[in-house]
Image (cartoon, rainbow, N blue to C red; front, top):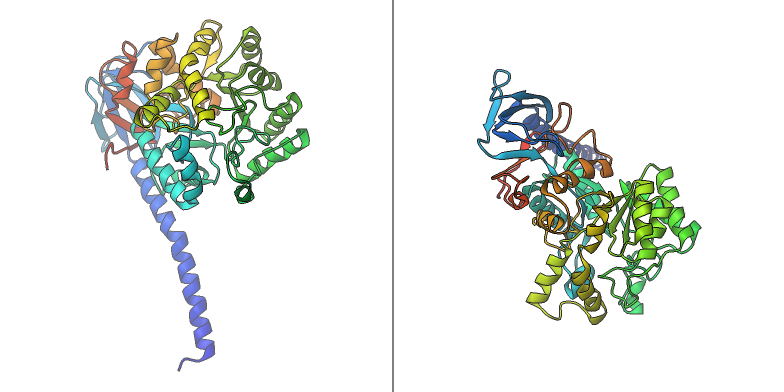
Length: 448
């Protein structure tokens, strides 16, 4: 029989070995990913848009080292000895696209979303987020801003992607979205009272001090950006409309606290008063912004906030209703039908007024992997293909605080680029057919 001392020593050694393996396993994976990106790669193509908003270049070679662009050269050049050459022929190359408004942890809507919220698990949420993240990445969107995730799945995915453990888009994450009690982000809406205590409500705030505390909770979780709602929402399971729900002092408290901690603020807002309260408080972006007035446009210009119109939500609504006319409860269906009628009208006002536009889809309401559908709607409602592409590259990069990293193809920037057939500057629907994706110098497989 083994002595107690021997058993104790064996347990200690075994525990230390397990701990060491747990540390080494992800490290080895990350090292493997880093090694793959450290190779010198040269991407060649006939047409390359290095600076969105400017004319594309002709035949160009992009030299990539350690996952970053080291040179942009005229003509087809092979680069340093031993470099891997990828010739994309006559495809059109442009920077990796950026979606400023997604929800990677879900793609359900209506009653299906409610059922998912009470039957799924944090572990399954994380796997679903990675699944949707790959759909998004393969669609050419190498960077996303995730605006709302109740249980931390996308925060975990963000970190796993950064470490190289899994493949996915670069993620800027907001953690839990903040609203007032009974507001758009109140997860207890429509739940029986006996179930409400089981729902995490630390994202709710009432009064300025409470709202400051709600922001600090999200900062403590390690979020990149703060998301709040100053109005009701289309998908809120409450018949309280889409008007203002957060008072001016509450909105100001949120923005001031977030900015104090170096975090930008994205604001869900539909109704005019709720949009204007957020802009007056210093919000960095307005999401949806469905009912602007002249004061709204003035405030956008005065504060330099971005407008993220999320037009393709209507595609998700139409598809779910076509499949099941009862997909949404009556209180939500009324708002969905309204949104179908008015979507795009706000963008038609914002563009000629000179408001800054950043690309965002609200994917999760619409389908993940079909983010590029938004381009067609943006052009339909007042933008040109060129300005829509700017919205999804340089503008979105500025909004996300990543202008030195992504949004253009310059030496020193991350080697994020995509290739499409045709010319998206002439026909923006070409961006729906992505034939090559490079993220951080690594080729993304377009199928499993």
